[in-house]
Each structure stands twice: as structure tokens, then as C-alpha cells.
Image (cartoon, rainbow, N blue to C red; front, side, top):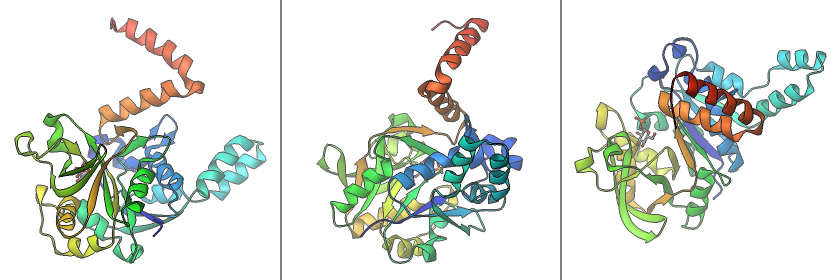
Length: 294
Ligand code: G1P
């Protein structure tokens, strides 16, 4: 069955980006000139997703507006012969069908995903976390879709290796090896201490899930951090059904924290021929100014 819908939870308050997030949605903070959420939605659209369901909280209207048409701005750009810019913003406005559902209390990722149950209905779907930007020619979520397709539509969780010392930042999976990149999962645990972690395979926010996850989400108790964890529901699901973990290809930036955000900004500035040369020149000057030798 084709995966048409993606849930992107964006209800978080973005406290690591205060004071900016006092007034604007974290997802709208740009990397160079493009909001972070744009990259995540682009990944989904390039993978063939037709509908995005944002799980939001108050103060997130700007994310929905960003993916809507802005007729006033379009008219302004047209009047001023700014056709390149006009095309750019029209394209964003017609990129994908967007809907939103509220998460009225921040009770965890599992709870956020459950809020979209009625919008999803009885079909498999994708979940992409907005704090994780993954860059790859074949979108990471498309790679997971393909693995799902090849395994009778089973749930597939994207994983990457992390240093053992970082296991307490992620959901960690365990399972039996199917091939070099794939495990048949036997369990998943949320943010274990390094000494308790079953593996160092972490889940950086890319999931293909079958709708039976909702029944589980309705039943699970609160878990780590006293929140309803998607991880706990997946842990139950993999005991009932085939669930695969897949080591996808792509470079992942954790833009949910300031360091990861800076890392992405520097990388994108160096990658883009329009910014590269001047940026390198600036970097050289700044490094010399602060007496930093590489
Ligand atoms: C969430 C999930 C965790 C996952 C992580 C990826 O945690 O609960 O399983 O590995 O996102 O970024 P959070 O970072 O929101 O605390």
C-alpha cells in the first residue's frame, strides 16, 4: 500500500532556541534563508508523500502559513518584476497539502503521534521529526518506504550508529541481523544509559508505521521522562509483528540544538556555490581574528 501521509510533530516549545522561540516557531528559524522545517517537508515530498499532518501547539500558525500561498506577497513581487522570487514562493505554497491537529498538552512523542490518528485512518504512514534534517539524494524516508514495500508493508524504523556515550539521547533498537543494513527488531528502549543500552543503534526521527501502532499508543503507560513514548509503542509492536530497523544512507543534522544547527549552517554554506567562496573568505578572516589555527 502506498504511503501517502506523513506526521510531523512540531508542538515542542523550542526552549533551546530561546529567546527567538519566545516569539517565533522554532521550525521557522532558517538555515541560511530557508526555514528548518522546509528541509524536512521537502524530504517527505520528494519521497512521494501527498499530505503532511503537523501536530502543533499554540504559536505554530507560521508553519502552516509558510506552506500556504501568500497572495499579497505574490502580487507585490509581480508588480516589482521579481519573478525569480515569485516562482520560489509560489512553489513553496503549492509544495504539498498541509493540515494540522493540536496537541493540547505536551505529553510526549507517542501522544503527539496519537493526535493524528483520525487524520491517518487505516493506512501506513511516515513520521518525520522536525529537529532532524537528513540530506541524501534518495530521501531517508523513501529508503524506509522501500524497505517496508519489500517486506509486506511492515513498519520500518530508521537507525544510525552513535557513540555508546550518546545512547541516552535517543531511542535505541535491538534485533536480529537480516543483512548488513537491516535488523528484524526484538525491542526498543527510550534513552537508555550507556551501560543499559542493548546496542548503539539510535533512531534519529524517521519512521514508517502501520496503523496498528495507534491501538498500542492508546494503551501504553507513561514511560521515560513521565511521557507517552513512541519508542514504548514500537517496542510492543515489534513483539506482535515484523518491525525492521534500517540503517539508512544520508547525513543527519540534529538541528534541535544550537551546535547541530551551527553545523548544518556551516555545511550548507560550504555546499552551495552561491555562498561558498565568500563564506570561506569570511571564515579565514574570523579564524585569524580569534587566533585559531586549523
Ligand atoms: C525523540 C524520540 C527518540 C528519538 C529522538 C530523535 O526524542 O523520543 O526516541 O531518538 O527524538 O531525535 P527527543 O529528542 O524529542 O527527546
